[in-house]
Length: 302
Image 1 (cartoon, rainbow, N blue to C red):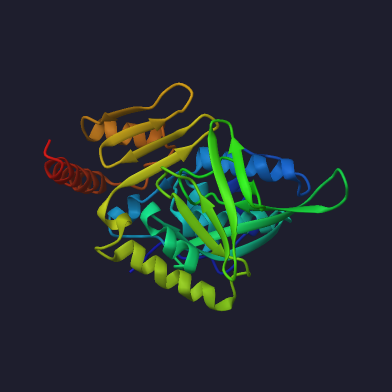
Image 2 (image 1 turned 45 degrees about the horizontal axis):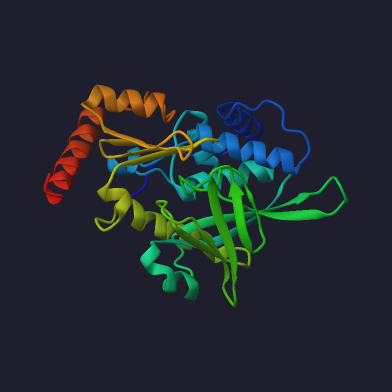
């Protein structure tokens, strides 16, 4: 079962989102704008990590956006249902025109599946923003929930989209929606339905979250992961292996020595506050991570 802080029946919504914005390092937001949207996504990717600490400890938090916003304000992270769910609620609160979409994430070997239908294991967002230049609007694909996805929103139009040394693409899928490509990443393919997620989607997301956070077949259950994106590259911690993807300065990779270094990296590199972890939690998580790493290296013949 999932768990988390019980929602206050009379929450101070403004205070919740003010604390969330402080986590992002943003004090003033102004009216919705392209510049504001880009700044919010950049800050979110830099400061709120993609991570599965609580899933690994067997106490996955719920995906209610208000609950998640409180967790983010307290220094936690999450995965797509948390990251995009709370980010959408924050954008709503700030006056942005946000649409939630049922999506899916696929391996490169699953390209045919991604082109045919949507698995429902991802929440994607599009945001319509005023264009100051001509008084019109533009729609952007916004995704803070992929871990190593775009640093900034992508215009929702077919073709290639370059951000620094990184390249992405979007293509329209007839009868389905949109397909996003980021070859070589942990989420090389993602798609989403063009229509807004309807009332039934909330229950479907809850069911999928339960599966992803408890099933022995789920990657979130099998492997510890933390990812953080910035303007130059991507930091990734999978098990004990810390990697930095930086196309300009070169990629690096090393194995962390022990629990002290593991937790120092989790807090220092990924910005995940650790004050919710007891000594028993830390010991249990490290034991799980170390065991999985040993099994992984043995399988590779090292």
